[in-house]
Image 1 (cartoon, rainbow, N blue to C red):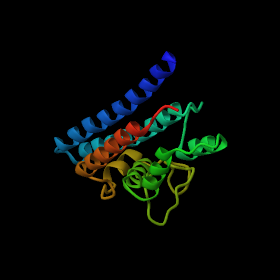
Image 2 (image 1 turned 30 degrees about the vertical axis):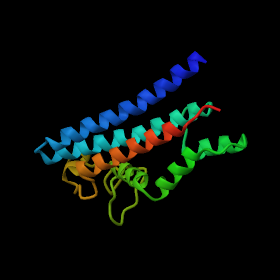
Image 3 (image 1 turned 135 degrees about the vertical axis):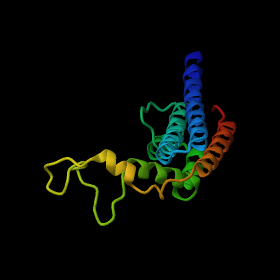
Length: 177
């Protein structure tokens, strides 16, 4: 049993660490005067914020004694359903993922990963020009792209606070069976 609590503690520490890194990135963005540096810090904050959500998924999987290396809400729900168990934590997270601040965090994370280009679908030839032979200058494209889709650090801070409060509430309700 001591080994299990140590693993569970590691999972909680990892979630807390990602939330801390998000806070540091927001602070750095807030003190930045350079537009590209500000964007970089905001994207970093979003990556850590989404990472804290993923780390909490690992916490939940560990809490329910599920052997999963990359748990998702769906995979945890399926495993628990097979055991005829229900997780109130998963239900709450699914609601917020469909409609709420978790949906906003996930959307911002996806936008950080993939550039949205009007009338041009994302293809496997990322980084190639229209002929498919010469690489495009991705650095210039990234720097000159509009970052109007990127939430400001105040919004990211708000999401971080909402996620932190949610995680604390869910942890308080998690009771060993």
